[in-house]
Amino acid sequence: MADVSQVASPPAHDGGGMTNSQMQANLTGAKEARKRAELDAQLLANRIALLKQEEEKAWKKIEETRKRANEIVELRTQNELKFNAKEESYKAKWQSIRNAQAQNTMSREQAKAMRDETRRSLLDKKQQNAQNTKHQSQQILLQKKAREEADHDSNKQRSNYLKQMKDEAKRRMEENQLAQMEKIREDCEARTAQEEALRARTDSLVAKMEKEEMELIQRLQNTQTVQRNAYEELEAALGQSTQPGMASVRKPGIRVGAVGGKMPLETDEPRPAA
Image (tube, rainbow, N blue to C red; front, side, top):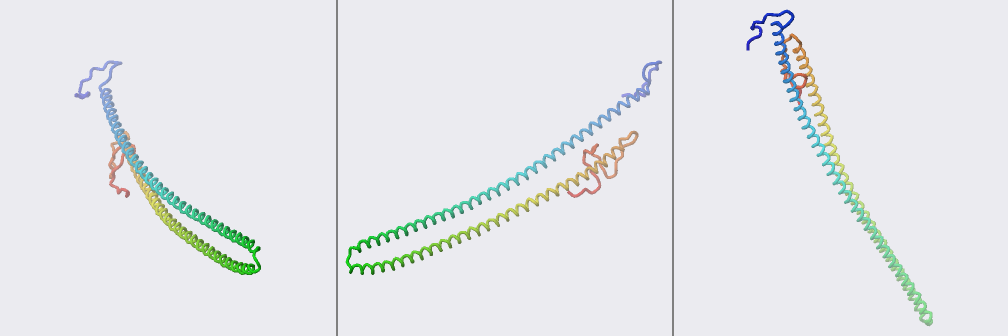
């Protein structure tokens, strides 16, 4: 395409038309405007690509956070189920003990009723014997007294024997109950200690995870601070390079990726440890 400056300009007419220099200036302005528009389009495309990358990273972090939260909730649910199962086991044991106590109480009441019935029977027998002996002779009266004395001794011995048996049975039952209660108490203490150990281990794991999370957040904040500083340096450099009448200046050790603090930088400076 021929340069406008090389084409002979028509003679200027008074009061109308454009001069050759004006046409050349308009063409140059149009080219510069087109180049600026293309540069703005490229910068906008770079910023859009960066925003998409940042969005993808954010979603990955969100998914990881949700996964960690689900794992913690699942572990907590399992611990609650185990605790509920142990509580039900303890309730069943206590119910069994109460049932045994009720059975023992019923047995004692039955034994007392049998003793009362025996005493009533003996009393009735004595009364019947007394009525029968009233009609006997004097000789039979002596025999009756001797027999009554023998019965009295026998009853006394029987009563003492029954009392001893009752006291012995009561003592054994109390010893058995105390032994059962002690065994249950020891079992409860052992299980409680086990639960406390499990809870302490779980708390330690949660504390470790929380500490790791805080370290990651701090590292991310440090990285973002370094990145913002780099963006500010880039913006300062680009701000100088875009001033009218000045050529773009490239800062030593910095490779520019985009404008406006939206693209990562590649520098010769050592990066902070991840």
